[in-house]
Image (tube, rainbow, N blue to C red):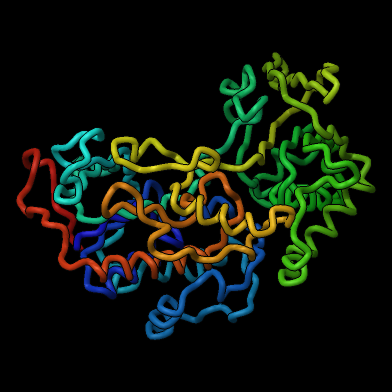
Length: 428
């Protein structure tokens, strides 16, 4: 089969390797560089050890290529995982010519068939509209199977009431950052000695607070750093709860929890706003930002900051498969079958605090949608549900390969070109 994969991150690369091992033709479209999101995540330490962020197949192929791999239990930063594992994967002979960087998939449809028609969809090829940096690149590609492994890191949530953008939010431009910055490295000048509005109370916020303490202790301009922190009102607990078993099994997570918690209790440079809502932003002539806050009682407060750091999670980009028949969960925006399976697992103990390590694979059927041959894998398959681990994606890949192997024959997609010379079949 001809398989198109959207995204050359850890999931897309592993899926491409498995598909090539099964004898399929593969083309991977990456809107930026290989493992772009991991490059942006940068120096942040991952919570899970290397063996949970890699596959046996990947390690086997790299070992055969004489690539020195990290120890199985090694805790890497995102940059280290990219440099020492993901980039070497992308350079393996098995993927030679299969990865197209700077090629953004803008939309996916069925050739010659609108979204509303159901009968016979599996007999038509997928048509992918690709926006490539190459001027001579074909705008359309065809495939029998499409795997969307594009992740969610490029689609941050908004910071205003009810998940909407607050008035003025879209005009903030570079004053608002929605991804983890390298506070101790290349981005230090943007945060040291600055007034920062931090929004969010997950592990990303904990990482930033831990890094900012180092900046403050570093003296000089760092001593003037001030943080206004908006988070949910949990009483004495500032951060989102994590299952005790997860803290026990993931020492890096436990260390971060304890470290950031101590900083919040002791630091005079952090002012907390539990339960506050951002009502509006206004850019000031001084290049600062005036932020209007409402406390839980509706009392208004205005503060001035230099930068807004919004670590409030991410959502899937649904636009690229709008022309396909994909059943999505009304709450998470992940594929419905998988979301229902995850919810059914939680219903056994609704009071339990759910975590990443609680997640399990739910089998091939949970990854199928009404659109034959279309799969959403990786973080995007969980939608807005943040409890995702790469180890789950590795099992998802195996489940998809089992589904494809069970096919009696490839979907009967004609090999001739469609739409004139600008449309091409996928080639390995």
